[in-house]
Image (cartoon, rainbow, N blue to C red; front, side):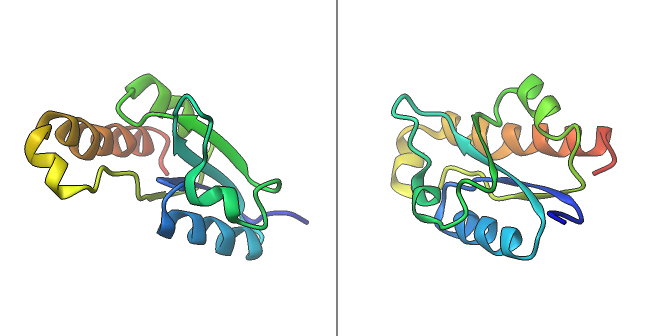
Length: 117
């Protein structure tokens, strides 16, 4: 038996997100791992986990509200770790950080509330 609950992890391509993905898969959760889309189709730290063939990896962007609607539609738990974190660049391009870290979080939260996650 594979899972007890379906879990979404945003920011799964990061250091913490990849380790959380691996741990929850080991605990038999059905894991959906969100990685920010890039033209190289690189999954970041997820590339190195042992269970990458056992989890559902989705590429996309939390800044897209419609995308977040489909992302959260059938999950039970959300671990929201997606964020832009390079502080020096945030001084140069603050709007991109606001869009991802604030609006993106709002998209994840609003759609989680919509589906009673």
